[in-house]
Amino acid sequence: MKNSFIFLLLFFAFATRIFAQETGAKPDDPEKFMEKYLDSLRSSCEDSLSCPDSPGERMIHAALFLLNTPYSENTLEVNEEESLVIHFRALDCMTFVENCLALSRTAQSDSAGYDFFARQLTAIRYRNGIIAGYSSRLHYVSDWIFDNSAKGTVEDITCALGGENFPQQVGFMSAHPELYPKLRGNPPQTERMIAIERAINQRASLCYIPKKDIKRKQAGIESGDIICFTTRTPGLDVSHVGIACRSGNLLTFIHASASRRKVIVNPEPLEAYCNRLKTNTGIIVLRPSTLID
Image 1 (tube, rainbow, N blue to C red):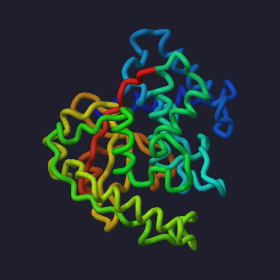
Image 2 (image 1 turned 135 degrees about the vertical axis):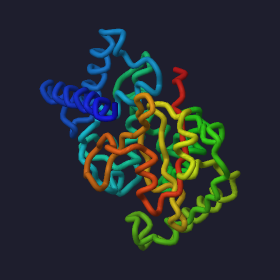
Image 3 (image 1 turned 180 degrees about the horizontal axis):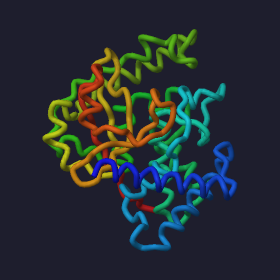
Image 4 (image 1 turned 45 degrees about the vertical axis):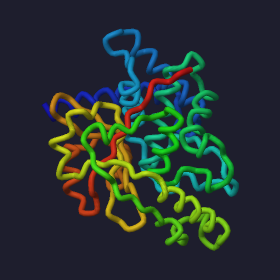
């Protein structure tokens, strides 16, 4: 079952990418690329059996449309002043998930189009949906979860799946400003980040599923759920994100892979992936919400 499932995912994604290329959808032309994504969705819906009609199914459709997109770090660090960055030519793990979420929400709207997508992406990526400098971007995934849960974009279902208290304490960014172009040599910006980290650490803790418990508690995870991989790295909460996909008892995920340098369907089950990574401690599971247009 595993091999046939992966084959079907790869075949669908290959056909979708060829369609996009033949019709002129270039990754460095985001408006045109968006049009072709919506065209692919309409084409799928010509057959009611293959039409993605739930938030999770739309997440999978978007993820497969972006399959094989090159991986790149620091994809948002391109402008001197903080502004919305939209491109599909290269993605990191977080921009991959954000783009899929914005695409899936756009697909649910009667106002589907590039401008609506841009508004959705802004709301997903920035605190309270407002761009107000570098510190308004939701850099820590736990902050992203808190803000997007409050906005009704996603639902954190980890506690309901039987998760336990996640002892999050963030501080990695302010402790290592040299790793972040906008913090490096910028004490005032670093001070703003310290204040944000302090606010995150004062909130009620999230739940997570320890990796030893994933096999036992994974039955409630659905295709299209967002998987956040928690880490033991001091000062960090989450080190990677992806989108769950399953067939029967097989649960894996789609993600922008740093090691493979592109968006892939992970070839091993979710549990095996977590157990292989020494710094991984478990997962947080988020369910995309239905758009209220």
